[in-house]
Length: 230
Image 1 (cartoon, helix red, strand yellow):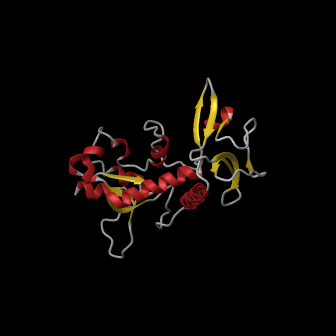
Image 2 (image 1 turned 180 degrees about the vertical axis):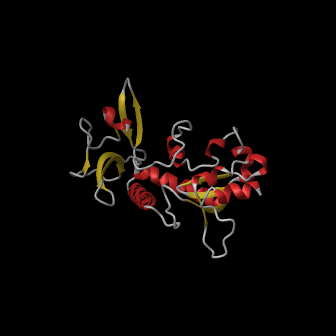
Image 3 (image 1 turned 30 degrees about the vertical axis):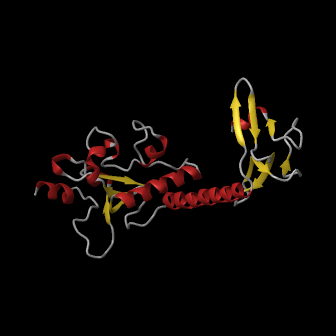
């Protein structure tokens, strides 16, 4: 009775039951109740999606392992790894690659744990609809994925060079099987330029497939100073 009063009298957005097929909605205070104490389940949220991770109690209970994620949406810390200052849902400054990592984390929880609903706040509104930041995160995640797929296709056609770099010797790139290293210029979806070292079996070169400065066109190993560090 006390717990029921706590939930209902506080005006939380947690629904005791739903029969309309819609996910449950939690506000941050309601989510805090699922902390594993007094036999309560263990819930966490990422990108506003709430998951029951009770079956992973050894990893998530109390001060053990990932206990700092319990009872809150700590989306930011999944990327930054700062489990002291970044246990929050602020991700507006993230890159497409970081958004993609978050979506992959969310996919992991959907696969491994039980989805319970949404947190009303940064990512979902009072009606359980996605907010702008969540839509942006998912759009940017798709963009990062398409760029990675484009890079994979380029590398399949023209394999990447072997790369070695040290403070003392600078950078070295080389190709196996008699191929020739070239500085390859390309473009990812959306017009983003990209540059990398690729191995070509043909000896030729062009403005988009350049011989490294100071390296003979038929060399299979080239010194490139600090360019290879990246």
